Image (cartoon, rainbow, N blue to C red; front, side):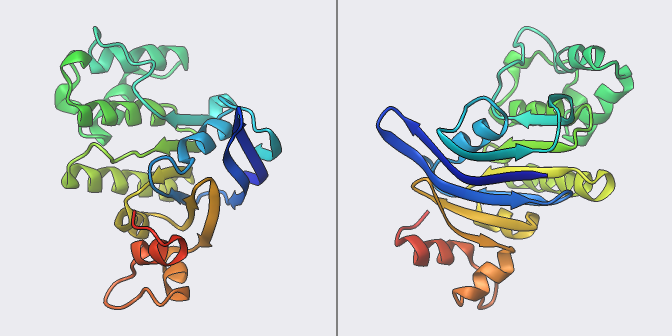
Amino acid sequence: MIEMKNVVKKFKDETVLSDVSFNIKEGEIFGLLGPSGAGKTTIINILTKQLEPNSGIVDVKATPRETGIMLDSGGIYGHLSCFQNLEMYAEFYKLPKSKVMEVLRAVGLEDSAKKTVSKLSRGMMQRLGLARAILYEPKILFLDEPTSALDPGTGKGVCKLLQELRDRRGTTIFLTTHNMDEALKLCDRVALLYKGKIVENGEPLEVCKRYNAVKTVPDLESVFLQVTGVNL
């Protein structure tokens, strides 16, 4: 469903992505892991056609209508309620209003449907962004740090929702994170990104086994330290 092959991206004289290659199968949850500044958001921006690479091949087998994106709060209007914000998108995609309440319920915002967005916490705003991204049941979902502002309980709920989207609808999910424990539990495959390069990839448990990072539990953070020499 998604492929990057030998992708290079430069901003002026700075190379931010260097020979990046990976592929994602239909119905997979794929995690791109790395510290801030590694190039994760740049990769999402290229995959969603917000940036063009300097060289390499990018192939995403979905139309814009079949793609859901959660990057930031852009396109969410602070003077409107949660329901009103999603209602606009529902009307655009000719979806029933009942769909709006369905997705608000799925992300734990049902009781805040009438709340003005400007009064939401950062975590609630993040959940509203996720609700907007899944409103029209996209084939591919791009998520940039989807649980970074959430408390542990809400984060687990979002992870469960993503697994349900994969299992029930066959949604292909690409997400970035620096939460190694979350990636172990949620992702079918992962790639570790450091200074614009993919330094390791594969099934999370298999990656850990390669580096003897499975003692009582798999430890992707230990793998990252071994591969790069730095802690996340």
